[in-house]
Length: 192
Image (cartoon, rainbow, N blue to C red; front, side, top):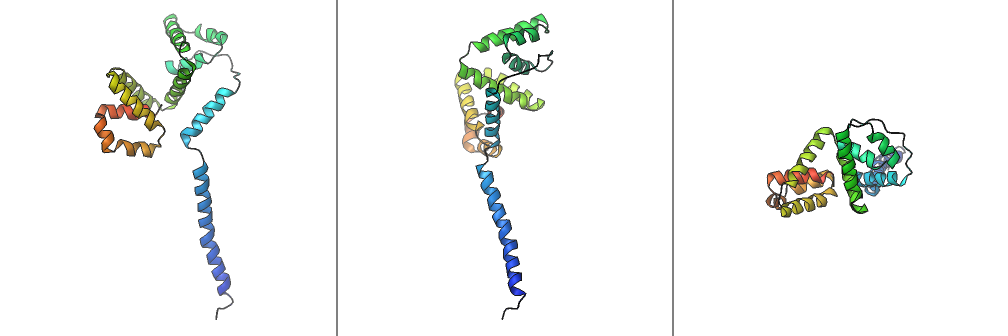
């Protein structure tokens, strides 16, 4: 006893309820396959390092010392000499010493430090100051606390922001670290 308009009506209802569900399922599948933002950043940095570098001649740089160091460290010796010649003598000596110390490190350590430096300089200025303050505070701690904080920061660096926040709110985390140490771990996890 269906009327002629009932079948098209039912078909239309099925289409309007099924298509959004299929579209949602397809979007969810794509999202699950998509790399995480941190993974994308790491892949982009890796690709940039593998590309040949054709950089214009450097100009005097008034950015922070870390950004300047990062830029100078990646230059050829000739490019570096030209850029350093434009700096005041005291500043030039400091940067040259940092570059020499850096070049004496094993390649894996150099790579890790450059990655951390890039992540630090990509943060907004206020966050950079907070992270730098945490780095300085960490240096004043006993070795066992430094080790615990660094290990926890590395562990948390692979977490999403939500996972990191949830982890920092657990009793286990709060019992292991003082309030100042918890702040350090949170700040350092951003650049690990």
